[in-house]
Image (cartoon, rainbow, N blue to C red; front, side, top):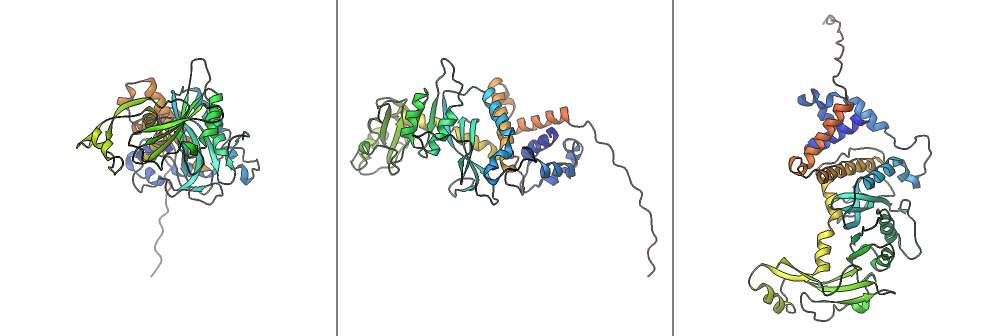
Length: 390
């Protein structure tokens, strides 16, 4: 199995356009080195008959997630054990590519991966710290629903419960407008976790009394106030090209930071303010709210985690519906290992890229667990026969 995983990782780092897995055994330089450790037929047999859970267990279709156990729980616990997350993290959706027939998959035409399984991940700028798989027919697997939270809000709350609560450690979670923030931020506040995210007006996530979109608000102006039953959540409306709404428990209205910005589109209402700041230049320094700058900077944690496997991925074609989740676990493990290596050894980030790390990892696995040399094949004698008479 270790040799099988090493070959998967090696293939993902050297995969060319339109190159099938069997083509790697036909390349002359591969036959002499890497792919000598296992034959192509042996590789295909492992891929075909691979099982994670006990094959004797009769799992129903609603228990599709259990086919990855106990591997999924072991990998997730190790990812949390060997990495201490930073102060600001991100929760967002992740798509796992799968185009087969399954009632658990989603179709999202606006996403880079238009069809597949969906999961919710808690990430720290590329490092996937915790995750939960979601189903279109059965919400998230192993989800505990509190009384005052929706299924998506309960997912974030359950992911946040995996933080290492120690003295002196505080965490903030950034989310987009897919989550019901008002009740969720209040619940996270009880755990000592800060939260921030955008909110939708039409979904009732932002208090309607703080909405001033109908008024002619000058550009870069901020308005809002405390909301919620206890008033611990701050509702903010910031006027950019259009009105942007935030809910936060870690910011104030008065905080601003000066950053370089591109000149916004000029309209009849914001023209004087924009000309006063930018003049004729296309870029200039402008004082924007800190909540906007923090959200733009820390919201990309899951996007970076999605970006790494888009370049190199181990997923192969299969006829069963759960192996794409297994390949996603392999990719997540490799990416997390790469980020841990960069964090422990700063010179490592200049010496090894993501592709070079994969090749090194596959080489070390094959060196330790692969065969040193392959036995020569026996040459069979073919009897010569006389051609039949014409």
